[in-house]
Length: 340
Image 1 (tube, rainbow, N blue to C red):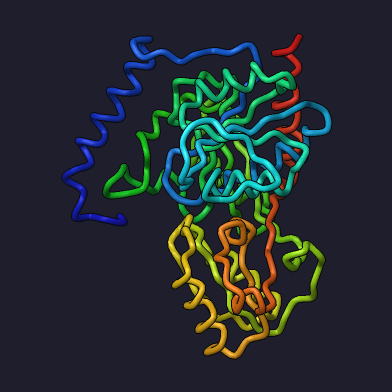
Image 2: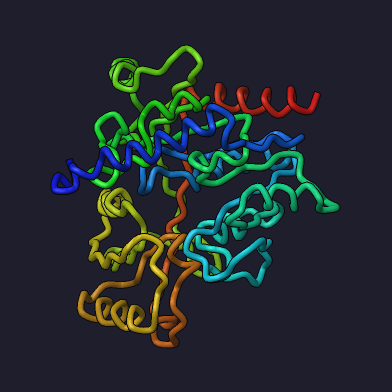
């Protein structure tokens, strides 16, 4: 248990979330349906489960076949209301993860709106309305009815071994998974054999209506700020403001990089003093460069001295092994049946 001293408050949180879900289930609080296929990407635990790379997987697979829009609340942004990502958008305007998606998929419409019902309505009123909408991190946002719910749980932090907030990281009771269509165990350490997959299946215990899959994070070649590929350095300061940086650090160590780490909290809104900390850490560690994530780089502080340091970006993607064809067919069938 992460925070045992907070265990007495768990019943209060359970009551609040259970009452809210019951109000939706009884129709007292209403989920609005829309005449468009909506895919919800989410989880039932706080922290990094890999929602953004799995959203990007959907875009890789389907954005040439369908007009897809991604709708996010834009966590951490300093603005309000409905905003569409543009080439000049900043993380302060739309949030780091929406900006990351917009930069990697410039042909995909990426919008943010804290009121997702309003966000969907505005997308449908657009003269270039999408064929499909992907809701980012919206499993608990039940005011929009999603026809397909894809829920993620990390291999090393399964929801089956967690507790409700505030003692643990679960946002709601595991019974909420009754609303899920696909459950994916993310961040698997390697391609799992049949025995390992069966152990996970018994642990997750999916119902007959769930499709259970497993995915692994994979790392793309390092690039510089201009998106040109670069060789792996011998040493680097790894600067991260993400929920779980250990996977990245271990990957770089496995590639022979001598790693010095500087960690900030998730979604850090980098400041001038943060830039100075980066510069000092770089100089004190005597390394060749800084390595950071795309999510961090879209929030990178503006500083001439920091800009002069060679800075490389580590992009990630996912591999789903034999599950990829199954997930592809489920999503494609959902969209095509909806449009039939």
